[in-house]
Amino acid sequence: MCLAGLLVLAVSGCAPAVPIAPASNTTATTGLVPPTPGAGTPAASTPRSSPPGSAAATRTPTDNASAGPDLLVLASAGEVASLDLVRLSGEVIPVPLPDPSVTAVVPIAGGRLLAVLRDGRTFVARRGPAGLAAGAGWHAVALSGPGTMPSGAFAWSATASPDGSRVAVIARPADTQAPSALVVIEPDRGRREVHPLADESEGVAPAWIDTARVAIVQRDRSDRVFLAIVAAADGRTLGRIDVRAVGFATSGDGATCVALPGDRVVVGPTASVLALGLLPESGPAPAAADRPSGGVALSGDGRFLALGVHDGETGPIGLAIYERIGGAWRASSRIALPAGASGGQPTWLP
Image 1 (cartoon, rainbow, N blue to C red):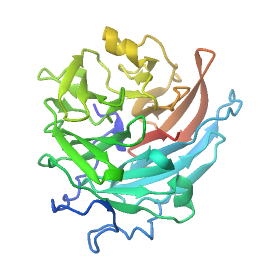
Image 2 (cartoon, rainbow, N blue to C red; image 1 turned 180 degrees about the vertical axis):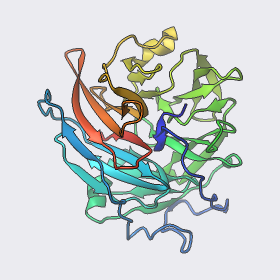
Image 3 (tube, one colour; image 1 turned 45 degrees about the vertical axis):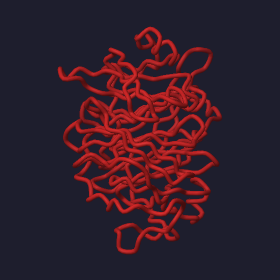
């Protein structure tokens, strides 16, 4: 089961469309450069607008409009991705993307955004979402380093390290969990390293548990889901935690984690999961008709949670926002994704 929304598109309910062919492996000069003409990518100085049908946010009747961080929502309709900046006040601002095949957008150090395309190409928005909304545009990042993407694989989902200097990406084919790889991008060094993974990987984005390790949702040969603790430096599996979480993410500081064991949502200290091998016991209670389906994300301090949900078994996909107050979770906002969207990947801004 893929819950990474198409990261997105799959931080991804369903497998996205067949990826475009990977770019060549020609080593590029380190640093920020414009995209190659004719490569199928719009010029960095002229960002492409998101497709029609932006997300819409609504307040719940019990909400007191608490101040909180902004939220990026990456969704897809067919083969086209769209990105929205959502404020907890309910304001939704469409944000342009560098290419319709974007599968992940994450905040990195310096208030910037990094976008990853299916074929692994990477772009940086130097002035963040505000700059994009003002027309500042995306800039291609030339990457070089050891390793190549597995045959038939494409970039599926991504998250930034706690200090925002690195981005961890899961790469795998569209219709199978293997072969898979952990791709670590350091945009300021113009470096990308591809590390093959020993086990099959879901589409869930890697969850940073500290500056050196990520937790990855994987499957063993008996098709049982577990969490692999993987070294970001070389892709080595350092340990396996026998938990049945089909979704797993951590807060920006790595201290708090959220997991999706079936239709439940549980939140607790990351250290306890690592030490005891047990998931937290409690978390927000979704509405009776909601079925988790899509991405899940905690804010930097773990106070806010965004959860992709279906309204009923076949209803439209949206995002439910929760806030933790005094140790208890309460419903905050509701975000409706564009009509026809196949999934949604939420990412909190710092």
